[in-house]
Amino acid sequence: MGIRDRFVALGQSRSEAEADELRSRLALDETPPDVTPLSSCSPGDVVCVMGTIRSVTIRPAGRAPGTDIEIFDGSGSVNVVWMGRRRMAGISAGRGIIVHGRMTCTTENPTIYNPRYELAPVSS
Image (cartoon, rainbow, N blue to C red):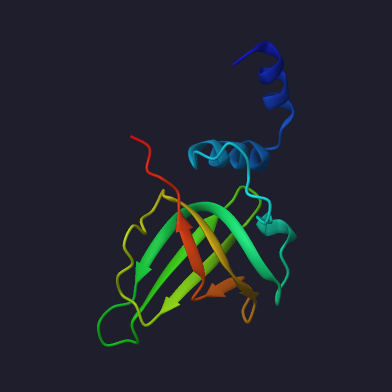
């Protein structure tokens, strides 16, 4: 990291620095053109968001099957729910993901139900 890069990094907010780190960890040279920062998404919008999976919750037996995750992109977070599935190959905390779906907000937490998704390659 050069001197100029260090000064730029010092001028960034914490969320901007986290967003930059996420993009580099996702091994993408640049953000895909259709990706929208979570802070710019509104309920009802069809969105494409990119971030890191913060948590994964598998609903226990006895309840309707489902997998819930939280994605963070440096500007905000969103809950993602796949109904009817207790297992999702490759879905794990810390993994990079791009999600395509409709943003809802029936509670105070924005949620995307049953989206299409792409996992970022795992770095070794």
